[in-house]
Length: 202
Ligand SMILES: C[S@@+](CC[C@H](N)C(=O)[O-])C[C@H]1O[C@@H](n2cnc3c(N)ncnc32)[C@H](O)[C@@H]1O
Image 1 (cartoon, rainbow, N blue to C red):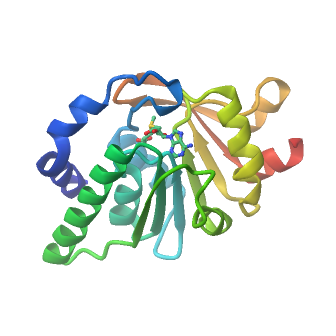
Image 2: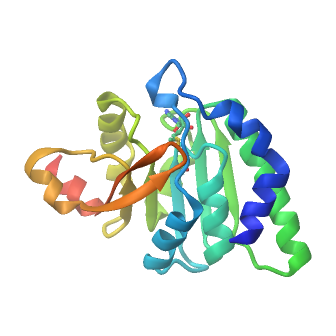
């Protein structure tokens, strides 16, 4: 993952420092899952060239780019904040170029700037996703509920959903396996569940 780290440092490290503070609105708070943790998640899910990863709220594209380099999978990310989406595109381009120069077969990365609920591309990607990531710890309950009802229910059976906060609480939590994780803004638990969980309870 040195390549991903190097590109990130060269392209955008200075800009990210100014973006990582909490915004006025909690839904658009920025924080990143750490690369070594993401590495483990992609590895455990045995992703390969035929796999698809989707990141809902993809920030600077760190996870989708890493997934495509690490596993050769196709990856799609959608980000609401245009300044982050713009950095993501810079990282994507630089990584593609670096992979070409080093002879690394990177998967295809598609990025969209805008609201995940307004995306016309997302339903297609959600339907074919094997792994959906939602770093939703700072998201409001309304946003989390909308993500389940309007997006996650479109996922195929068996698709894995990795989130940093539970979408559903109470008795239903037993279906999501908690794991420790670290982000750039602190630690906590991560939850790994499958699409079936959401289907069963809605
Ligand atoms: C905590 S960051 C996650 C960044 C990256 N996915 C990671 O985990 O390393 C959550 C991102 O979700 C974005 N977001 C919030 N609401 C959104 C929406 N409706 N559509 C697209 N992105 C959204 C925020 O702007 C923020 O950049």
